[in-house]
Length: 525
Image 1 (cartoon, rainbow, N blue to C red):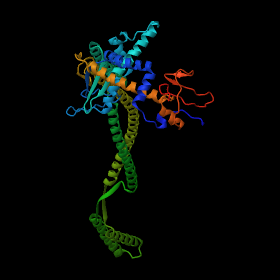
Image 2: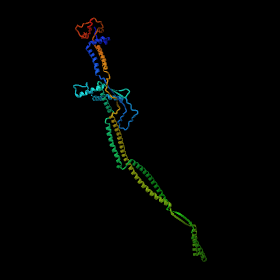
Image 3: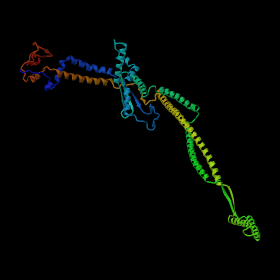
Image 4: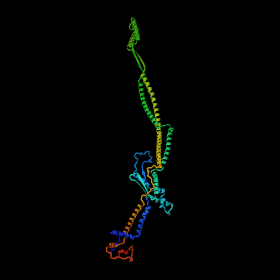
């Protein structure tokens, strides 16, 4: 006979029958009795133990309060009161996560005393370790029985807590509401911001007072109120003096050229000029000369009457007559000239203009030297005022910066004060829309839990029987023997024969895997 491998009837394709399940149940009587007892007892225990009171509350998430953003800039936030910001899904989920956070649940457990309830006590453990373990167990149980979910298409978060004690359920939700609002306030508020802004505002106030004091001491220290204005005036004067110096230098060049021209003209201009010229004959002289000539002629005639022409006195008279006639002829050809001269006014004008130009030249040179010295003084003064203007500008910028920082931190301090005041008065973006109340009726009747558990236990018992049936590899009927041996059964061994007997069946399998048929004791044929 070939070796036969024993497998389950399901894998071999045998049909499952009700009597097979009954047979499996009768062969495992003890296990089935435990299952029946569990079907009866477990629903009762579940009905008594499971939390059947449900406390409920709701939170409304809004954006009506917009806290100022803590930034170093002085920009103001524009908040539209007509169109408040829309709460996003991310914000709702963030609030749900805050409600489900472990530290919040731990604080709720400690505040409501859930860790001290019966069922969380441990015997034989150290006090500190026992306390921590009880709190951790209570936190896990609270997390399991607490459900916080956002309501669809709303800004409402619904929180449900289940517990067998309605008073405890309401108290836990109240503590959760209070602690959650505190946690929301702490999470959305920077701790110590009012103190920080107050310290910074005070520091900048002192810096501003010091800068203003330095700015007030500046005029007394340097003797000028507005260096920039004085510098501008000095530069304007400097430009005027530069223009005057240029004009003076031009006048000096012009005067020098004028002096040169006047000196040249003075060298060629005479000191005196003829103012009157008169030409005429001398009648008295001519008359005398003619009378003399007549007398000489008469004398010659007297002499000739007495003496010869060769007589010497006659010749001398003739000579005198000739000379007189020559003198009369010369007087006729050379008339008398009368000239009148006077001081040359042109030379006098040139002399006066030259003296004036030389004097003007000296004055212009002195003015140029004085103007040049004044320009250097104004340049030094403008340079000094420029330095003072830079120093005053630094002081002004420092004072303005300190004032700007002081006003900024003063505004930030006021914003932080308002924020803390709003937090202290519990004006938050999360409000309790529905307060938790003590539930008067259980969420579900204990019979519902009992019936549900009853049917589940029945299904588990049936599943257990099926598992036992399919995991059992023994042959239980003639059909199993004929199916596995592929032959008809001819005889059976009664129960009185020695062998391995198990629940009415005999297993005669050999140690060397040689399989023998197993017969039913109730059907020996």
